[in-house]
Each structure stands twice: as structure tokens, then as C-alpha cells.
Image (cartoon, rainbow, N blue to C red; front, side, top):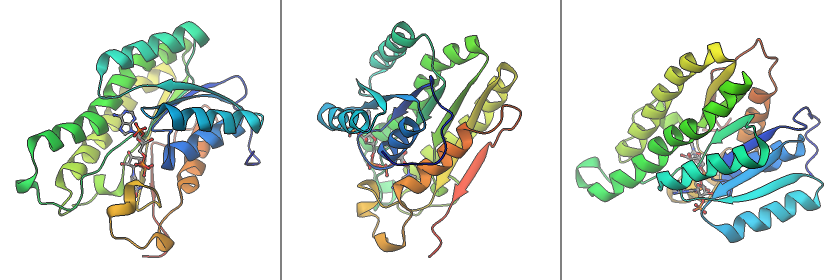
Amino acid sequence: MKDTGVKGLDGQIAVVTGAARGIGRAVAIRLAAMGATVALVARDQGQLEALAKEIQSDGGQAVVATCDLLNPALIVQLGKRIRADYGRCDILVNNAGVGNLGQPLWEMPLEEWELLMATNLRAPYLMIQAFAPLMVEAKRGHIVNISSLAGKNPLPNGAAYAASKWGLNGLTYSVAEELRSHGVRVSVVAPGSVNTHFSGGSGKDPAKALQPDDIAQVVALLVTQAPQSFISEVLVRPTQK
Ligand code: NAP
């Protein structure tokens, strides 16, 4: 198992969306290495099963939680399952996302806009609705939303993606204020280009990109802050442009 040198999540339950590959996979591996039991959420059950086996064979704990985040009823079911099985959710990482880069907004079909918004913005809302009550009851918890530097800047030929991430940032800042008096921290991480399947079509040089574990390291930092300390936003840039 990856030795992060940081433990401290023993007994905690972490739900990570988009855990099948890329950033979510790296986050799941790191949180499991720190002692959390990680619920692996994505649609590709085979990938999730393989990852759960890998985590378990390294001495960690993970459960497969196959779920299509486009289906609100399945998200409600997932929340009920975690409540029934564990009675708690300490960490929720809303990471799953899709991009549709390379075309101007005026040529983008409506169904692509809808898919992007439903995955990148509506799913985090539904996941928060499913899991925040468990955190509020426990008076503790941490929600980390994975946004993008495209949520801080204009992105020509990626306007809908940028809009979804600007929206996710606004959602995060606002929900953070709703939940902080309940002991629940809500943070956003905004990476630049990360070397994943997602960024394959971006045309950026993968050698100059961030690695998925760079983002996992930031998530680990956020969820291990002392309770009185709340890092609300982290922008992560590759060193080389
Ligand atoms: P990725 O390699 O394409 O992985 C995306 C993950 O999301 C997969 O596990 C996918 O699994 C899951 N997913 C997509 N739609 C889903 C759905 N309807 N239901 C459940 N799971 C779904 O992407 P990544 O690069 O790791 O990106 C992760 C996040 O980082 C995204 O929010 C992205 O916007 C953000 N980000 C990425 C970059 C970058 O350059 N890579 C930069 C900034 C921000 P299934 O297909 O099996 O469902």
C-alpha cells in the first residue's frame, strides 16, 4: 500500500465518486491507506471491484458502491445503504465529472449541456443531500468538491464545462456557510491539467501535467486539518506551463 506517512482516518467512512479511474481512484487509494473505509462510486463495476481488491490486498478497506450519478433515485439509495451499513459518513469527495471540450458553446447540442450539468453540478447537490444529514447528526464531517481552474477562468471551447465548475465553486462556498455551524467543512479543490483519461483530449503535454496523486495529497491535507481549522479552497497548478 502507498505509505502516505499520514494516518488518522481509522474508523472513518469516506465516499468517493468517480473512483473507477483518474483522480478519484488516487483519492480512494490514499484515503484507504490512511485508514478510512472507502465506498467506491462510479458506473464501471468491474473497475471498482478491481480497485477494491487492490486496496484490500494492501491491507485497506473498500466497498464497491456502483451508482450512476445521473440517476437521482440511485443516489438516494446509496445514501440509505451507507446509513444502514455504517451509520456514518465522515468524508464525501464529489469528484466524478465529465468534460466536453473542443467546441464553441453555440454549436453544443442540448443533450451534451444537460449531461455535463447533471454530472458536474446536479450530482454533487444530490450527493450532499444524501450524505450531509449523516454529518449534521454527527456534528462533524468533510465534503470536498473537485472543481477545476476552468471554474476560475474563461475556457474558450469549453464554456459549458467552465460554467459547471464556476457553478460548483459557488455551490461549495455557499453550502460551506450553511454547514460550518454544524461542524461540517465543505472545501473545493481546483486543479489545472491532470494526467488522466479525462485530459487525454485536451491537447496538453501529459509530461507537464499534474498527477492524480497530487490531488489526492491535497484531499488528504484537507481532511486531516485540526477541527478548528478549515481550508475552504485550494488551487493546484502544474509547476511547468
Ligand atoms: P476521469 O479519469 O475521466 O474519471 C472520471 C470518473 O467519473 C470516472 O471514474 C467515471 O467512472 C466517473 N463518472 C463519470 N460520470 C459518472 C456518472 N454518471 N456516474 C458515476 N460516475 C461517473 O476524470 P478525472 O480527470 O479523474 O476527473 C475527475 C474530476 O476532476 C472531474 O470532476 C474533473 O472535472 C476534474 N478535473 C480534471 C482535470 C484533468 O485535467 N483531468 C482538471 C481539473 C479538474 P464511470 O465512467 O465508470 O462512471
